[in-house]
Image (cartoon, rainbow, N blue to C red; front, side):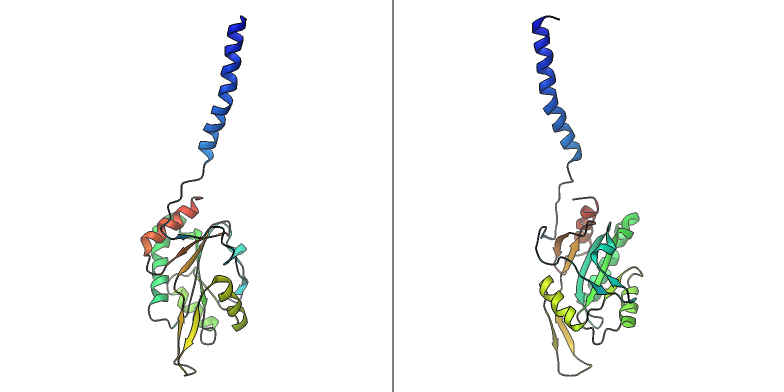
Length: 203
């Protein structure tokens, strides 16, 4: 082989390697995220929980590996925020179609005194049978509120007729159990669906 031809061949091979690597990298690149919710990826808070669900089973985020998990705090006698959030999540699940089963919705009660397991079960299952409620003890709730940076307070002196002020947003975890997004109350099912769809797609 002439020297010039051999040199040209080597140059082609050397230049071709980086090109192939770039093409491979482009093929394996994750989908570009365009979230409507606040991106809190890498946050050092809201890292997880160990709580009892309304069926009496102890739960952690690891139980829901492979699913996007939506966690919000509320109570069953909440007049508007909680039922609205659950109704929106029910819509989102329907909008996900065949992937609806890959969304797990978790309501953590801030009123464990009145929200018994039976009450929580009936309440969440009225929106979707797969939705779960978590019932912390008073001490677990205090610790969880600190870890998730949420606010709650009993309002009223009556032992039965009081209400609860509480934070209204929703935390979204990806299928690997990592905290990713914070969705403010009132974002709507359309934006929630778009964000959860991206998490399920690997964004």
